[in-house]
Image (cartoon, rainbow, N blue to C red; front, side, top):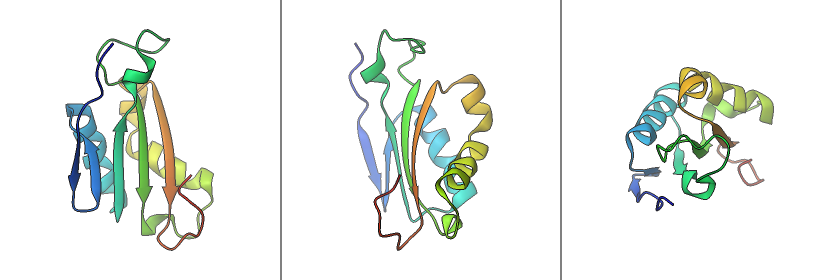
Length: 110
């Protein structure tokens, strides 16, 4: 079983320190200019399960807060995230949990 990768905190942004985490972080930053972004590698929780490709980079959670989400429903917000990561989702990411919110949303990110 793989141990979870160490998370790094970068000015309002938390990121698991792996090459794919950096790629996810950079793409979401470019596409959404988030005020908060956490990229969390959940792969260690799924070791040996379907979709585990052995890389330790197959299952992810992203927590994103961005002005781009203002006025959008949950599905539209998730579509923006999926669009930014489309080719990674097709080839390298087996599972992605998305918690997306706009600044000032009263409910927790979903």
